[in-house]
Image 1 (spheres, rainbow, N blue to C red):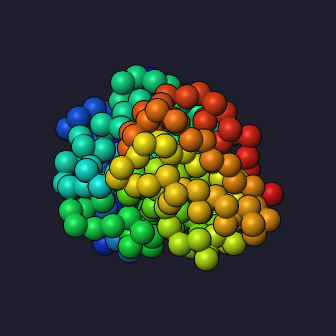
Image 2 (image 1 turned 30 degrees about the vertical axis):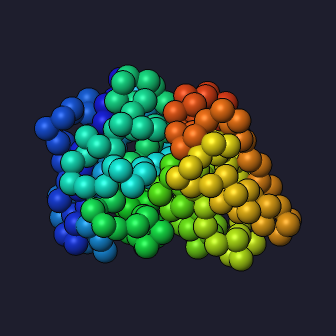
Length: 239
């Protein structure tokens, strides 16, 4: 089984296996000197059969919450897909989990996120018709903002307890959306997700919202533990 690998992309890309865990033989090595346009540490997960057959794999981008910002990638593994694969769960996606630096807000890092996606496509066997974006809390806001800015790049998105600017959600008319929120959330009000989903649907889009009546801010654990989310992702591809 492939494991999480700590990597960094800088102005001149410097990458390799971190001290945490090494990816098994078969991974195509990343260039040690590739031009890029940002600086960002991230975790990489490759499916267990990656490299064993010639095929392109779906790509999932996971954006963490505000509490996981920093310079230690161990923080990124406390929630979401990064947590699940670190615990040994096999998933049918290439998963990129970047870390947001201290004091930075994901919606202000859209170009960095997109540059990382482009670098991943160039380096790994990615099915560009099946790129998925998801995130929690601050990462939920980042998911909305990034997808609204580059809707043509994503096959589906799943923002969790996030929000954003409803007046630009018309850009998501062709991007399936599945949002999640806890009804008792006292950090990010449920109304933040509701207004975004309503705006997408009013623009002719396909957005749905799952509300957990008994959950507060942590609506992500139940969401990411649900196999139906990943099955839903895989049902969608860009035409």
